[in-house]
Amino acid sequence: MAVAVQLTHVTKAFDTTLAVNDVSLNIEKGEFFFLLGPSGCGKSTFLRIVAGFYKPDAGELRFDDTVVNDVPPHQRNTGMVFQNYALWPHMSVAENIEYGLTLRKFDKSERSEKITRALEMVQMVDYRDRAVNTLSGGQQQRIALARALVIEPSVLLLDEPISNLDAALRQQMRDEIKQIHDRTNITMFYVTHDQVDALSMADRMAIMQDGVIIQVGTPREVYQFPKNAFVASFVGETNFISGKVKHTSNGSAAIETAIGTLHSETVYHDLNEGTSVQCSIRPEALIVDDTNRAENTITAKITAVNYLGRIEEYQLVAADVPLKAVHYNPGIETKKPGDTVQVAIAAKAIIPLPD
Ligand code: ATP
Image (cartoon, rainbow, N blue to C red; front, side):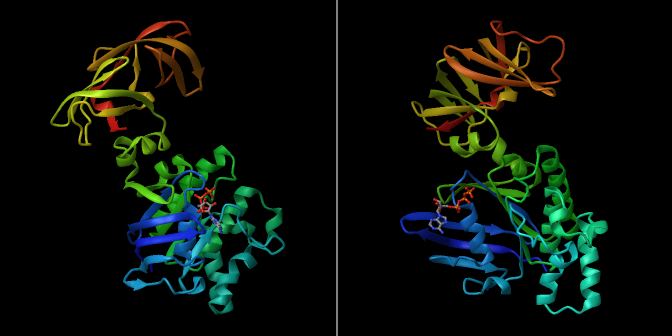
């Protein structure tokens, strides 16, 4: 049975490093929850606290209504998938998966049935008797998933599980892991520094920086309404234009910047006249040479064009401010470095974030 995971004021320090700093968080039963943050921000420490490998210095960890601070890892019924797979290389696929079932004292026929079901889930039924060290990285990762799923964990913990795979395989595994979640409805807790993992799979995600949770929300909420400049730049790409608020009213603002006065209709922080802000504008919100629809227009010069197949990026400069624009379906009418262009930006796409 899936459980809800609740952390209340959880703290864990190593000497003088506060790896997890007073974190409170509720992961709902059956939720696919992501913890996203840069290297060293405390993600693995957090995951290990949930798994039971570390005990919090302070605070409380609950699975449903039960406080589990003192419950050892093997009694928490958590499954774990590691970046480096952590399989036994000389054992067969079936033996790797069987281990957790033997510990739980299932009889032989039950074990065999459960192994088959787990292998079906990761589409590896035909590999049952293969030695693990004869499998590719992607296949090994599937077996690591099957081994974690076979015990029907209350929470499945995933620590950067696909970051060793190549780009195409990563995308395939994202789809498959998401489908496994949809089919099993296990509570899943996934830690990563890869925003694409989080944006593409998460029900909700938490953004962590220096041991502290900065923002929690759905991928859409976090991408569209970042709480601060760190979140805006860590989740997706963005342009920052610094400025000062000229006036505000009812969710909109006029902001004085080096590239002119920008009109924003996405104001969700308390801003006063004179407040210093960073205006976050996503590259896809800079519309080159199609100024009919937008409230803001600036003149910019193209400094570089990066053709990336499905998309094309323009490096721009406007009043010495470097900007990046991106557009889909690069067609015949591509611009060249040195071209002067008009760039339109919708007022809704400009997000002033306090400095
Ligand atoms: P990465 O993505 O690089 O794995 P992370 O976000 O998982 O990083 P943690 O491994 O949780 O980060 O580390 C958080 C901080 O705690 C870091 O400053 C790290 O050096 C420190 N730390 C982690 N484990 C220990 C330990 N066993 N002893 C001392 N310091 C530790």
